[in-house]
Length: 449
Image (tube, rainbow, N blue to C red; front, side):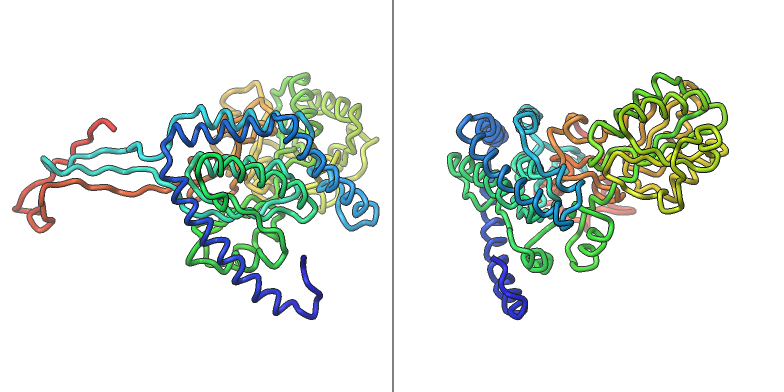
């Protein structure tokens, strides 16, 4: 457990050594995992999925989660935990079924490692290949959702990476039970359980971020400020999964019933999710679609806050303020703003969005295609709910997070987002100095992978 405040320096030093030892053990175990054949890693994934469905294992998991939820409810009652994090904390049979199904999807997917993505003959008897390979050791800091642990673990198993997982303290019991379940499966398959290691103490994050000679990637899942803090605190590459400020834009051609159905799903399906819509934009001509959305959302108990233009049509709405634009509520609250047109909508999204997921409802195909091409976000949808922005729904099995950056991976990051590649060249004694102007010419002939 964390020591008293007066011993923080000593605790930090102890954490540095302890976390380094855990990371080195995880990295060594990861090499075992990467050496498994594709069928063997698929069997390991199916074993974890079966364990999640086993009645005894499930009883153990749900009991651990119940302890976390009870403690979190007490913390929320005392004002020490926000309601959105409390909502994310619960596990039930449906969530475990979904995770197990996602692991089954991963097991059934084609093998990712060792199969060349490109083969190119540089010259006769000189063949170059680009081959996917694991990153190595991934550190993941994630929020209260305990189902993230087996999802992230499963993606690492599929991609041959070891993982250090640091979940929120409010999910400690749940995360411990889930990681122990995965570690038992690793042992059954002859892999050191350290391949999936759980870090539990707050000072472990600082210690992990200092391991730039051991870790290959850090994935930070949390609020904007937390992700920026992680990025500022390490020399390790960071893939950030920050807040989701998602918009739904009603074009003048939006069909009212469709608009209302999408708005309700995007806001009410899981308000605490990062892919839930936080603002509704509408342009002149979309008044009927707006009215349908206001009515449907109001029936679901959503608190609606409107700009002056919106309240001129719907005076019953609360008045929106500048603080409502670009705000992630994580609750049944939605801001509504009238815009002058498509360009104004795009400008609002560019100014207030988080580059997560944006959507348009429109019957006008050219307008929708312009929106899809112009919005700077990881996911952009036409006539579909923002809630589709999810690794499981994308057919990736799961996700380690939704990356809002632009390098390496973007949007829901599945197993392929945890890979890099190496170039392999096979020759027969060729030397580079024999090639060039006036010398031997390259053939540069692409071959079937």
